[in-house]
Length: 118
Image (tube, one colour):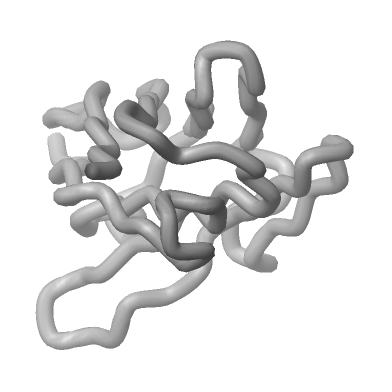
């Protein structure tokens, strides 16, 4: 059984920073793409950033220069460093990992709330 446990969300003032973590446990192996998504109230879930097993990254335009995604393959963990947070970054953040559970599939975390407010 594969489990993804997220941490690091919370309340922060505009301009502040947070670091999200997502650790995979269980039988998962051959992890390829790891990513972060977010969903704000009334909106669809959207990609924030992703990283491949070789370290190639991809970011949504609205977070470029502010967010940094990284991973620790030995720990099966993906991170999202979020700087200069804005109120529009308020959302539930989900991690997603593509790997072999089995089966070879996408696995999602439970989500962590990020609220940016003064």
